[in-house]
Image (cartoon, rainbow, N blue to C red):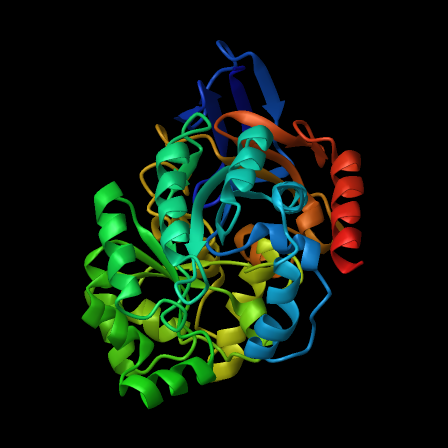
Length: 421
């Protein structure tokens, strides 16, 4: 693995300085000579920052991009998505995953999390591509074969946790409270305790989900999960759109991490998550794209911008979710949301070298009055020039170095076509 010195890059929070990478880690932050590095990269026209972290998604759903637009969540799931997902197989999940990984890498995402099925194929795509990921085999308890799905989820953890040179971390994932009611949820929690890993779950995504929970149990989905004991384990909860003040207090009390998915929530008409209130309570909130069937892209720069704008407009307060806070949610806070904050998410000596460069020599990024704000409010995914994961360059000058993009596009189009036949 070559050592690289990025000279005179603009680094978030530090200004113009040098960043050295050796043996997969950041070994220098500060001005230095060029000796001892295999490659010296003149980074004077670039912003250098931690790779973006996508805290919620279903990456093979790239194959379903555009097949179910402009419908409510439950109709979207039951009438559109689930029938097509029944046609997924290992081949289709693999190529859909590779397609999504291409999109994420070229847009500056170096870590993503995924909750789906046939997860071994997603792990294979992660291993081959070089990206970092937190993966979990989703479990829907109300579907036939629950015991087998739970066993498969446990086996996935055993097969893939810390694999791909440590780039794959495994978790477990009950799909949602409405698809994993007790006592099924209790079995999943026991399995997670046995393998000692965090959990992921969809939570309070739509108004209908919350209403049904009150109608059936007299409690919110958050209160149900608290009662189940789930929050005694490390948990990442996706969406958390429809919360009351007590729900927010519960999430804060148990240090539940949250994945905010503004584009998906808006597109499905689910609402606007109370992100300022969660942040005010000290809740860790990362950003996610969700799947490409409900977004319809995997562009994290778009999610950063929307997060910074959405809550200002909704609350009539331009001070809410500042540009630095939105950027933090996509980097260091996103790393914390995925329980990876000791490894990635900041530019600091000793951290893993997951780094991106954004080309600042663009009309929409000129003049450079406030580069951090430019990244949030002006930058586009096409401005990402270089992407490094674990010290390995995966994208350079906007071109992939580990993936045959033309082949992936061909195979993904074939798989999507076959599913619609």
